[in-house]
Image 1: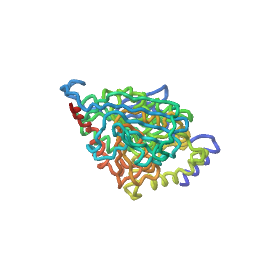
Image 2: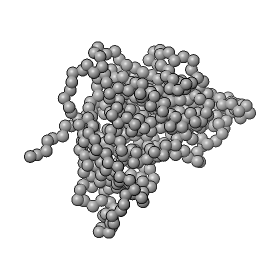
Image 3: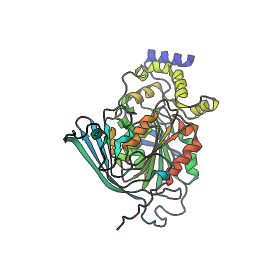
Image 4: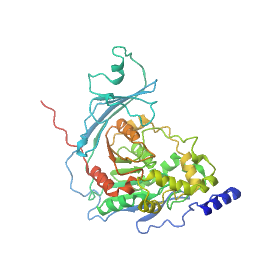
Length: 423
């Protein structure tokens, strides 16, 4: 604590930030880790594990077409802020995964208020089949006037959702961490899937882990970091790519899934929150001067331990240390929090995604209420929500076996072939 206070005072007096991660001198690969220069002077550490293949890529025996889902929905936005989602395509049977699916029912209508606070999920009565009154119509029967929509978006495509096995050379799993973490928080997942033969990729965000840390706030905006992830994705992506994100990392997964719908096969969101546009808080502790945040860094680390883990024993403290959580400079932490501005990432943006999504939530998470992930499940076209009772915000570190099993089950999952229509 004394060292932190001393460093913070020196920071204020000398105008320099402390505990900054400097640029890396080497970009050579070693022991599965490599350093990728996404822009001149902007270098990210990446863990890339690709098992040796006996056959060249694409040489597997051809599989018959299966798992094809007709993704069709109409999204209507009205001027009063109301969002109406009509699902018109195939159903995806969620019981395969033993999870809850909120919005995958065919021929259903969901009415939501865009002005609702994130986390206040609509009542179950908001979903109905054709011919049944929707929530608003039921409240005022016979008095509903025809309104002119502000915007109408139609999604109409066919997605082939297949089981992704470790023996398939066209499958890559991408893991993206959130604020204050590093690729080390995925250690259990990376080791698990690598042993199963999967190709895995996990980068350190700029200023985190062993990546370089530019001393300019603009380097940590959502758009700057998203372009970094785009560069990593374009370098390692293959035919079927699965994105796994945690916390803030979920936003980058959503961005990539929206940008590359033909390459992103599935998405896994771990404690990512609701489908709301990002906007930095004006009353956050992270708006304090960098030197003050540096003085408070021990308190911030302890607060994260209390809020991020369901238990605060020796094991959790060791996990926190090994995972490099909040082991970033005060300047980077402040810039990351103030740079979370992404107005495009609203409910409509998420509703446009036509990719299967697994939502994993730790019940004891004090950063992300479960209602936010429930809201996300309502908005997404094909969504499965799984709540882990023993976990918190860092559920993949607290309950690695449970999370690994759940993720692997979803990676292997494919929808049942729909039965032919009766004559």
